[in-house]
Length: 318
Image (tube, rainbow, N blue to C red; front, top):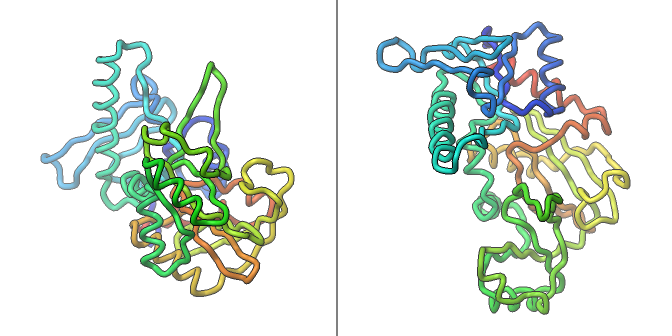
């Protein structure tokens, strides 16, 4: 059954992937209300009532150009929204205001009845934990590279020496600057000699490096699975998109079935998976980004990803 209410899109103003989906929804005549939690205030208002109405929450979400009844929203596309930081307030007041927004606005949105979440923000957050990802992938039968999460220098050195080649990865991408310059950590090789006492401050993720033939990016929207082979000589293909070669492929049926089961485990309806293909044709798990980018893949391959997400949001059936 296809819903008839508006599709809500929560994202920042500069999200080109959301722009693609909204353009397609507009082309189909589907009403869209776009908002960013960071705009809370005069540019965005929410009113929700509980307990005194048949359906909860009842109320409205309002922006300068749109308004929507909360009980009528058919789907919520939780793309890449920003929460407000209230920089104009002092530290204590900003911390208080941020908490009220996250738990007031966030809690109201999370409670939307009869709404399809793509994806539910709380489920996204759970699925973003890499150690949990690794454990679930292994339980479902996927091949997981030997991996160590530790803040012990001795354990890290022992692990690195036990494997032929090891890489370091961040446990979560975080905006990071030094002296006003943006810093990004890629997947990088690491040796035992590089490990010192600084590792004790926080957990680090070390992983045995796979001798890969290619990288595989898989995007799933509902029941539709799109797989792209990415060829390059790079350890981390995100370093230089200009040297990448893309080929649309069909996954082995068993891998496709397992990835769908993976999303179901976390109660997600979409996700972007990174796998590695070895020279013997074996697939190795790397990670899931529950809210990963995919717009550039459509540009490079012609895959109907925008249409697939628009179909999912238009259907609106949880």
